[in-house]
Image (cartoon, rainbow, N blue to C red; front, side, top):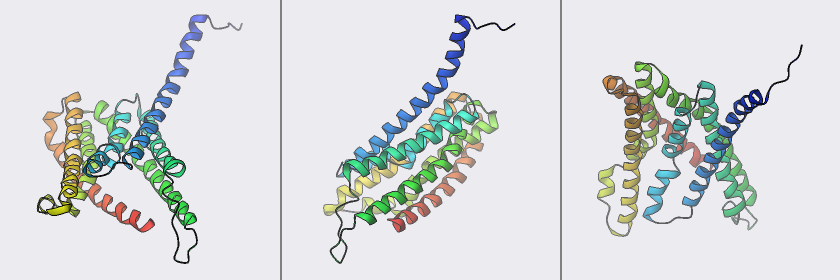
Length: 255
């Protein structure tokens, strides 16, 4: 005999179906906001742009958001999906705004006087594809690290927290290696303000990941495994800095 579900049972089913949908929508919205903030920074000039870029339009900012998305996920699959979806949403919104609103890809002129818009569009498409690919690789890794820092055993959680800090700080260390603080402090004259802005951005790039690490550690009380976190942070920070250097070289080559 077939029995139809009661109103109470239907309510339970609806809750189970709607929660993932709401979670996905929230992640997409968060990614869109992140992309919008990054696009807004492009319109800022002066020293403020350096700091704002580090805070909302950098690997640190987007990576931290991906770690948080994984940290709050209920399981591994959700952690991977949410972190990846957030990064891809942010990437697509950012480049869509460039395509439609700022249109900075247009207006160029070739040596022969013809329009360079096609080359600008091609460059935009290449960068969108490249960063979307990076998102599909970095998203799962950062999402799982965030989840493991919350739900893993002590050793695993400590290693995940340290690795998160190292990966997030890699861009900052790469920038410091390219422009050491003592050289920036020695700059004077008209370029002094710009140099101070770069220095401030570098400090943000290494201090904020430590703050993220402190939050992850405090949430799980992982202080007893500080040696594991230190090792994981050092190794992943080095690898991440090298990777960011290669990404920057590739981005300059691709235009």
